[in-house]
Amino acid sequence: MLSSSRRRLAALAATAALASLATAPAAHADAPAPAPNLATNPGFEIPTLPLADWGSIPGWHCAAGEGAVTAAARTGGSALAITPASGDSTGQCAQTLAVRPNTTYTYSAWVHGSYAFLGASGTGHDVPPAWTASTGAGWQRLSTTFTTGAATTSVQLYAHGWYGQGPVSVDDVSVTGDRPTPAPLVTGVPTGDKVVFVTIDDGWTRDPAVVQLIADRKVPVTAFPLPMPEGFEPDYFSRATAVPGSAIEDHSVSHRDLTTLSPAEQQAEICDARDAVAAHYGTVPTLFRPPYFAVDANLQQAAANCGMKYLVTANADFGWGASNTSHPGGALQAGDIVILHFTDTLADDLQRTLDAAARAGLKPAALGDYLR
Image 1 (cartoon, rainbow, N blue to C red):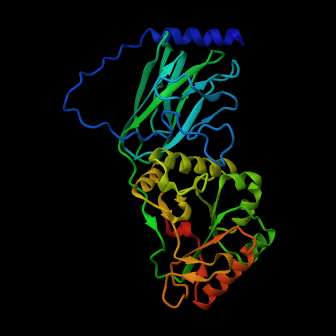
Image 2 (image 1 turned 90 degrees about the vertical axis):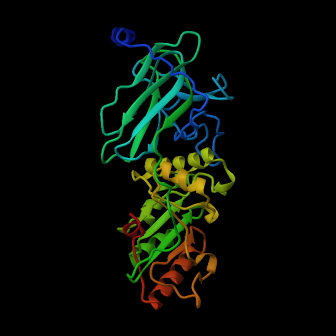
Image 3 (image 1 turned 180 degrees about the vertical axis):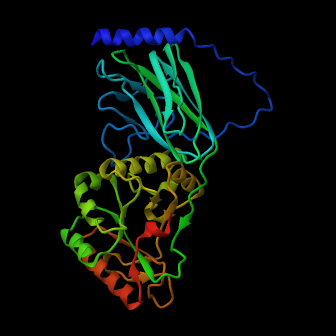
């Protein structure tokens, strides 16, 4: 294992001889304001999110046991410490970020230690990582620039150490470039089709009778479960969304009113819930349901930075025995989005929704077919 590590180090040392020194631009009193930082949890200051997997680093995903928050920070109170677990691992930590196609971005971070690497994958082009053999006793800024491909809408940012080497610290991450367009808010779907959309939130109660009803009636449902109940019984939500046209989407990590949080915390909530769905089900959400339907401009941008195409609320509520719509007279109309919850009343609530849709001459349809 050590010989393999030494061979890798020798190759790196040979490459290091070709590296050139970067020069810092002169400062100007009239310099424009800094570009917005698109990275999620760039300073590693966000506490572990409520209901997240314990020990996780909001916004970042590291190999098991190889990434941790440390108080030995360059600025603030926290940084990321990466420790490769063996001679066959670099200890990579990464995050996924939404981007615009055909757009140039700069990804940088401050690192401390030996053999620190910084780069991006999935950009649409080959991008060599920025790296350093050693930062000496201090911190060093690494930076790389990449231009996305014509069809690229997300990239993976990574930082890692080197095989069999000691810990590397990372802090003050920055990603600059054009932000994705803020995600629009959708309450109902403008359509002349005789359709209605069934959505179900949260997931704390998981009634098998609901899965049977959905299957028997062939109802395409859009589920917005939270990561913790997903983790308790992920197969339940797979079965609840087995009808073609169904989907599992994003509902945040903690179900807090996200408008009370900073933009950085909003982004961590949405991106981490997205990643939980992707890990459990192999699909990446593009729709976000804001808890309590609370929305502000920062949340719309944070959702877009996590790859969400729409923020979805509803204009009909049939949960907990209710039959409420936003229309005079209370009847469902074409394009209505109905909100339900995974509760002990869901089987009855869903049956009442289907009956109301039938009376209005509507049939359940796949929300994803209309929100692309």
